[in-house]
Image (cartoon, helix red, strand yellow):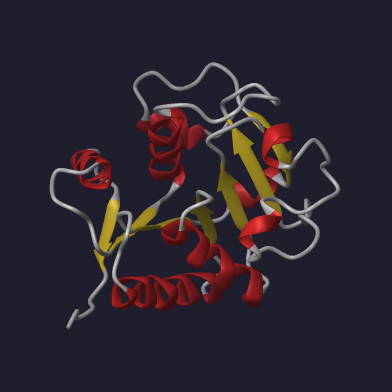
Length: 183
């Protein structure tokens, strides 16, 4: 069980389902925090921070199925970096019932096969569970708990991402602001 969850979440999930290399969590970790519908300059700044962290040997902690999480995953795939995907559904559901196929192939950012040697998928939901309301918020809580450093980009005031960033700051997480300009 990842020690970071025990340190960060007051009521951590009682069980986690994992597929891949648990060992990747033994490295420094980071996440990119951008709200839904972030502007392209914010996404680009996240790409640059991701590349820098990957080159420093850190592990990306990210979600799935939204561009703000897919972009860093794409950078990690291109660079051969380690990635931990936190799912808002069960692992078997995410892989379409076949762990030999790609994770979310419709997103077209992952290689044809999930690489369990350098990637890890984590879910707090039963293997065949579909995503339902509020699962994405639980996913985001795990992402922030597992990340040592959080790069904050475009964070919508009053939104869920701002709530997670504020919680992280209050708990002493390392936050780094991404600099970008929007026209």
